[in-house]
Image 1 (cartoon, rainbow, N blue to C red):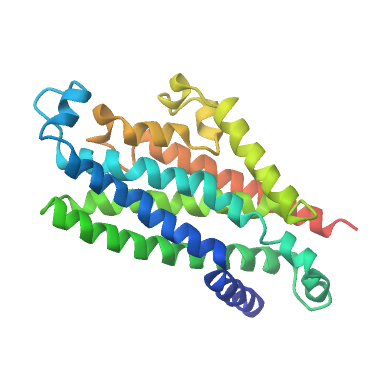
Image 2 (cartoon, one colour; image 1 turned 180 degrees about the vertical axis):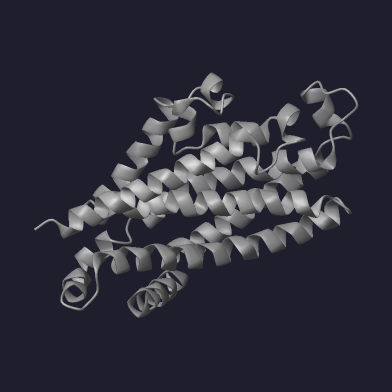
Amino acid sequence: MENILGITYYEYRLHWRGISLRVLALTTLLVTCVGLLIWNSLPEGQFARVFNVEGGISTSVVQTFLTFPALICVVVFIFPVAASECIPVDKHHRTIELIDSLPVTPVEYLAGKLLGYWLAGLMIILVAALINGGLWWLTLPGYDIIRYGELWFVAALVFMINSGIGILLGGTQPNRIRAAALVICVLIAATVILGSADDARQPTSVLSFANPAHLSLIVAYIDPGMSEGLHLTSANVSLSLLGGLIEVAMLFAGLLLLRRRP
C-alpha cells in the first residue's frame, strides 16, 4: 500500500504540473460555458419549438442538453488520448528501469498510475463543475442542483473509465505517439463500427453495453424526450458504466500479465 500511495502522489504532482491536464481543464470549462451563451442568445421557448415538445421543456432538460454533450465528448474522447502517455513516458525517460529495480510489483505500479491520474483529473472536474454551477445559477436561478450534480458525477465516472482505458491501452505501446494512435483508433472504431443510433437507444444491446464510446449513455442524456426522467439507475446509464468498468478490469489484468511475461 505504501508503494501505491507513493506512486499515486508522484503521478498526481506530475500531471497537476503538466500542460495536458491544464489544457483539458480549460477546455472542460469553456465548452460547458458555451451552453450559457447559447441559452442567453435564444428567444424564449425556442428549445420547445425545435424539438416539438408540447408544454415546453424544463430548465433541467435545457441545462442537460447544453452542458452534457460537450462535456462528455471531452471526457470520452480527449482525456483518454492525453492519458495514453502515462506509461510510455516512463519508458521514454527510462524511469521504468529504475522502478523495475525497486521492490514495486506490477500491480502497485499500474494501480499508482491509475490513481494518480484519476486524482488529478477529478480535482479538475470538480473545480469546473463548481464554476459552471455558479454561472448556471446566475442564469437559471433555482435550477435542480441534484440533477446538475448527477451530470458531473456521471461525467466523472466516465472520465475514470475512459482515462483508465487510455492509460492501460497506452501501456502496451513502446512510445507516446503509438500509444495515442492506438487509443484514437480504438475510440473511432467503437464509434463507427460498434455504434449506431438503434444500438444507442437499446441499452441491453451487447454492442451498446461494450462500447467504450458510451453512445447509449450520450444519446440518453441529450435526447430531450428521455432525459427528464433519466438517472444513474436507468439502464442506458448503469449498463454503459458497468460495461466500461469491466473493460478497465480486463485491460488491467491483460497488461499485468504482459508486464509479468519474461
